[in-house]
Length: 181
Image (cartoon, rainbow, N blue to C red; front, side):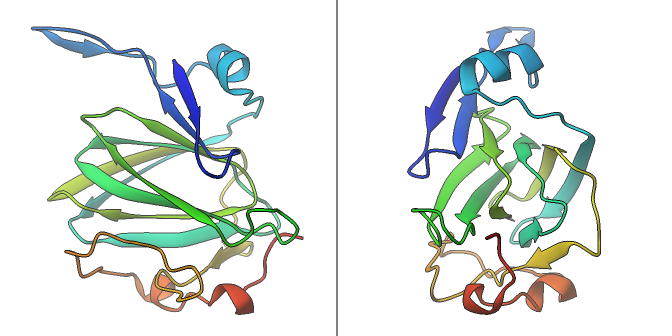
């Protein structure tokens, strides 16, 4: 696997070795030993999540404050623009974000450690998004930062008008949100 740090070094792009021929392809989407050796990820994953969304659906920017989750994310159908925002108050990259296209075609994974808000928007007709988490979902710990917070100035794909859940539409500005200290 190839591991590439992003502009926020703790957020990693992981590219698996893909074996393909005229029959199709094969790759390991998760290998605990390789993640530890190549990416320095020694986390225990406890939950797998799978969502399917239509074009323009924006999910996020989510995080759990008290039961923080690291996430290993990938797309198995379609394409999304995926965003991670550093919300660790004392981090040198606090308030910075990275965005990357994840697709079934490019087979890239993204490691988003604890202390980050996360979201994505679907750029294909439909997308299936899978992710492993390092802690269980806890509704009482869940928080949301609004996707279009002007202080973050996230460059979402401009050709889309996002469709949001009622909960995501009520996200807070970063300056008003509870964040990691």
